[in-house]
Length: 134
Image (cartoon, rainbow, N blue to C red; front, side, top):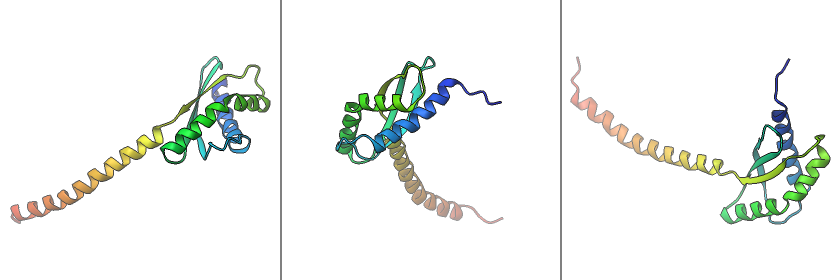
């Protein structure tokens, strides 16, 4: 038998349903393509942090986030209609910056790899000339 905590099951359902509500029912023109990346739910099911990652440039991301925050009561009410839960948690939307941070770190790694690749070739060539064959 599986031993999942109730909060884990509720968290998964909340993430799917909130994503669906944003995609299908929220009509705010400021909101572009948004991914619900995670939901952190308190063990007592009273509070939920919903991490969202809007797509676009900085201005589009900020506008999407503002649109989601202004639609948060609507999203919560729609979520209440979809979920069978006695008391729906308070929902707090948080802008998830992890994808941008990961992209930034990847760019740094690529620059390091490119730099080491060039100097690595020089090191290999210089090592070949210094060593005498045995």
